[in-house]
Length: 273
Image (cartoon, rainbow, N blue to C red; front, side, top):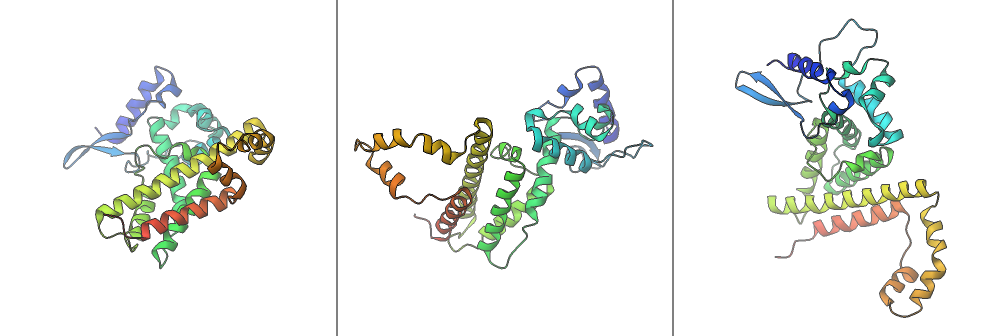
């Protein structure tokens, strides 16, 4: 079945039910298309754009993704719906189903648009500089689009820009002194990705908590200061006391950069047998 015909069929089916719920069908991100090699699953990035219509408002997947990103930046993923996107674009909701068949495809497009921003970090002459640039750019993107951190850590992102970022990072890490083969490279990528996901989710969660409670982290810590002091003075928590009293109190960016350097130092060293 040709792609355009299949898109139209999906849109017609959506018209018989809840149009927004159709976008919430999860995991169905591949599409069937007849090729010289038989029927193949074709993801949204490889499907051709629908034929232009004689309509007052021209659409494209890039335009839909950009609008969805703006709405998600403002309202989060829970506040994202096809009706809101269509209203923002000034079109009827059904027009969007020519371009994306479900919520998973919409999120795929949004995520890959963010990866396009990360890919601008580019390649540097030295492996560590490349990794630092990519990871710091990833943090910038996650703080600008907090919903992005919610989508990290699941199944791999396979859009063209996500693949470009993955290639850049893997190629750089493969040049690190402690990476001597494919197994070392997989472990290095796993350690780096685990750090990125954990660090970004923690920082974004703290930002959200500060907004929802109206209390910044430092103010929250100060409010619990007397209690914590009493607990530490009992002598039952000597190591925690050292961390609180003698440890460096870095801001979020300093903490991120310091821990990132620690991860890369570990990758650089030769792994234990």
